[in-house]
Image 1 (cartoon, rainbow over the protein chains, first blue to last red):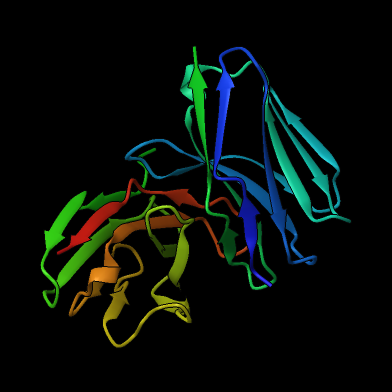
Image 2 (tube, one colour; image 1 turned 90 degrees about the vertical axis):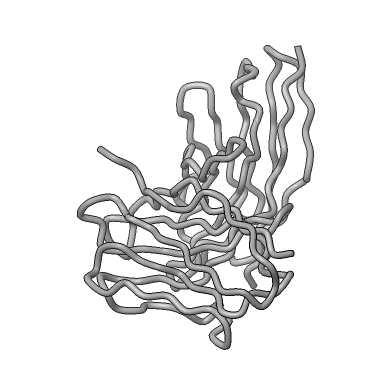
Amino acid sequence: GEDVEQSLFLSVREGDSSVINCTYTDSSSTYLYWYKQEPGAGLQLLTYIFSNMDMKQDQRLTVLLNKKDKHLSLRIADTQTGDSAIYFCAERLNDYKLSFGAGTTVTVRA
Amino acid sequence: EAGVAQSPRYKIIEKRQSVAFWCNPISGHATLYWYQQILGQGPKLLIQFQNNGVVDDSQLPKDRFSAERLKGVDSTLKIQPAKLEDSAVYLCASSLALVGYEQFFGPGTRLTVL
C-alpha cells in the first residue's frame, strides 16, 4: 500500500514542543522522511530516518519510528514562529518513489 | 550552489488551453522528477527521468500530459488541453542519482485553470 496519513492541523505556543504524527502502510519502506514547506516555496528536507533505527536526533528535531505500528513522529523542541509551515511525512517505496502524506499545517502562536 | 529553477511561478489559463512549465535542475543531477500537488494534498509523482530517459511515468495522464528532457538537463512539462482538475502546483525536483540521494525541490509553478 502507499497510504501515508497525518493529522491536518497543529497549533502550538511559541517555546513549547510540537509533535507531528504520521502512519504509513508499506512495511518494506527503507527510509522515512520529514519535509517542510513554507508558503510559496518548494519542499525542504528536514530529516530522515532509516528503517532499522528507532530514533534520530538532530538539534531541535527528534524523529521516532515504531516499525511494528508503522508510526513515525517528529518532535520540534522550543518551537519558534519560523517553524510555522506545512510538514510532510513521506516513505520511500521499494521502487524508490516517494509517497507523501497530505501534510500537517503547524501554526505557532505567541 | 544554485537550486532547482522553475518558470513561470504562476499561470492562469482557461480550460482546453495548453500550458508548458520549465525546470532547470541542479547542475550535475542526473535524476529529475515532476510532481503534482493539489491544494490540501501531498505531492504526487507524475514522471521521473534518469538523464534523458523516462524511469517511471505510470502516474502521468498521457492523454493530455507530456514531458521531455531532451539533453538530460532541462525539462518541460506540457498539458494539452487543460482541465479544471489540473489546477495545482507543479513541483520539479532533482537528485544526484536514482537511489539513495536527497531530492531537492524547486519553488513550483502554481497553475489555475478557469
